[in-house]
Length: 600
Image (cartoon, rainbow, N blue to C red; front, side, top):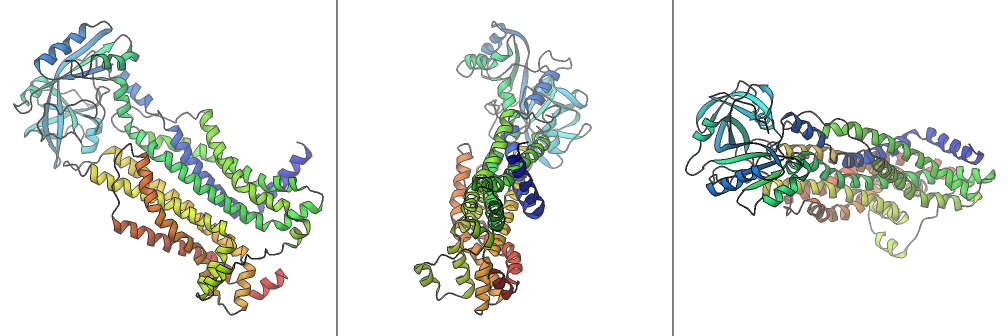
């Protein structure tokens, strides 16, 4: 290693070891941000493997045709003889009924099957046996939502049936997406809603007996193509515009089955950037505080012959090394956590396993972490390097900025507010960082509240009372994301206050020597963080609603309840005051005479 690099490495590493608490806080911020970003990147496409395994196990169709009516039946059956179709099963009768089990009432699609295995689309049993007369087989995600297993009892339109088995299929999206693609409500009456319709297989005789004049039978035909990759083009060419009814390709079904993970990715992607912005604020404050505390160290390096460039490189190398370590830890944590989030649910066979981390993902995550460290460290490092050697060795306090307007406005204020406003005027950039932390955090929380308000307004409660797996999983991810944002914001608030305490040692000592009590000084230190947080929290409300509107796939956002918004603003102020109180009290307890003597 060249001598210059060796010197930079030794000086940077020795400072990292000396400042263990600051190093831990910086790593926490970086690891949280890079883990969230990694999850948002690696979840793309992770359900492909479970769907393909299910498709292979069930001899899945390439195209599913759903139709009703005599003329549509003729057109649908004509598809069997089209060039490129080399296999089929069905048509199978499909009825619509009301299933009752364990006190729940759920609309279901009942498909009639024979006892012989189908050459195309034979659902794969995970429990029990195939449906016998008087029995039914439930789709696994639907059975999980109901809490049923093989051997349970259900009723269809009041008729009792035994649950002979539980199965998965690749011909229909898993619950609650059964009617997401096929217009299975076309022949059904209004009482059979499709938002939470389940999938049931039974014998043909039972399915045909469930049909009524208001809800006649429809039919499903499964096709196998010579070129499965051409399924989308085949469905588009022979679909809705013809008499063949609805044609759905296996690629569309795979995308619908991936909805669970795609919804998580849609949440994690903007969440990762919010976490990244908070990490940027954390590193900026930590870097600024470390540079302020390293003025004498920079002077010593220059006194023994170090150039300003060497000083800047030494100070920047510390945070760049920590950024590289944080990126590596974030990549590992995201890679290990992704399988927990990418489980496609009970509708598919098998699990996705650990996702592949591509070079593009590694480059983006590492580039983001290093960019955060570089941007936040560059300005304070250059300032420290440009400072004179004598000023660095004496490490004298920086003279405060005195503005006539600020003095006139603060002259009649109580001591805590007076002290807090003067600290804000002394370090406006630090006040802006504190306000930005609150702005980003509250924006994310308001966006989460907007999601729940919109979910209640647009979807409402299902009559069955069953839980939607997609919304349940998204709610879990949002909870984890909100905890991460609050954790980063708490770290920022503590770090900003502690940096302010260190930087305001002389002003605080002077204030106490002029009659201010330690409690008033600590209240002023807290006020320096709370005052900028008030407009930030208020501005975050429209930004949070706007963030949801930007990533909500065109869904009109519903405004959260005013009581929740008031609680967020008031709670944010209380949280900032509580988080800043401890470091402020510790800093205010130091004897004023000791501080002034040291400064002298």
